[in-house]
Image (cartoon, rainbow, N blue to C red; front, side, top):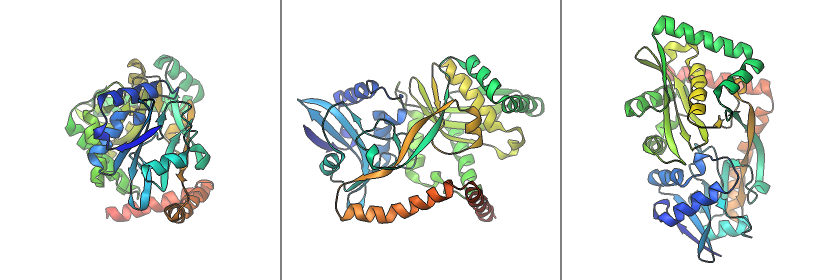
Length: 358
C-alpha cells in the first residue's frame, strides 16, 4: 500500500469519484461533512488542510482528511464546526492508526465528532455521546403524528405560536433553500449576537469559519450542498438556519432568530417547517448534532453515536497533547455529568454575555 499526502485542491477527479464511491458503500448515514466537497471547502480557508490518499494495487482505497498544526498535532478537518469526522476507507486495508499517523507526519489526531464505525480510531476515544436525530423517512405526516403522540403539548404550543405570529406580525411563510447572500449575512449577525449574549465564543469572529460558511452556501452538489432556510412574518425574516445536506441527510448547523420576535418561539417554528420541507425533498434524516438542548429532545426520534478523543503514536508530541487537552476534557465531563453544576455554569456564561453586551 502507498500513502501520499496532498492538499485538498490537488485531488484529481478520479480520486474525488473514488472518495464518493467508498463513502456511498460504507453503510454509514450520508453526512455531507464526510464528502470531498466539505474537505475541499475547508482547504480553501485553511492552509493546514491535508488529505492522505491510500492506494492499493494502483487504485484509490482510502482518504484521511485532517488539518496539521505545530509539533505534528493533527485535528479533524474543520475541527470545531464539523459534526461528523473520520477516514473514508475500503474494508480490509490492514493499516493501523499509528501507521496512518506516521505516514501523515502526525503525532496525534484529535476529534470531537468521530462517527460510529470508525474502528481505526474508536479504541482511542475518551468519551461517547449521542447526537439527536429525527427520522423523517416515512414522510412528514407520519413524523408529525409521532410528535403529536410523544410531545403533544410541545407541538400544540408551537403551532399556536405560529398562528399568533401570523395574526400579529404578518403572513407566515417559509423558504427551504434561500439563495440570497444578504439573508446569510442576516443569519450570521443574529448568531454572533446570540454567542455574545450567552457568553460563548463568537464563531463568526473567526475569518475561516465565516469564509467556509460563505463558500458552502454556494456549493451545489448532490453529496454536499449548503441550505439556507428562512422563516418570514410578512416580508420580514424572523428566524433562519444554515446547514448542509446530502441526498438523504440534512445537518442542523447554525440556527438563529431575531430576538424581537422571541415571544413567538420562531426558532421552533423554523425547525418544524424545516423538517416538513426536508421530508418533501426526499431527506430521511435530520441530524441535530451533538449537544444537549430542550428543543432537540422534543423533536428527536433517536440518536447517532459520536466520539471525542485523540489518537496518537508514542513521542513528546502525544505527551504534550495529553497534558494540554485531557485535564480540560475531564473538567468539561465533570460538569456535564452534574446537572445542577451544568445549570450554574450556563447561568454564569449568560451573565458574562450580558456584561459584555453592556
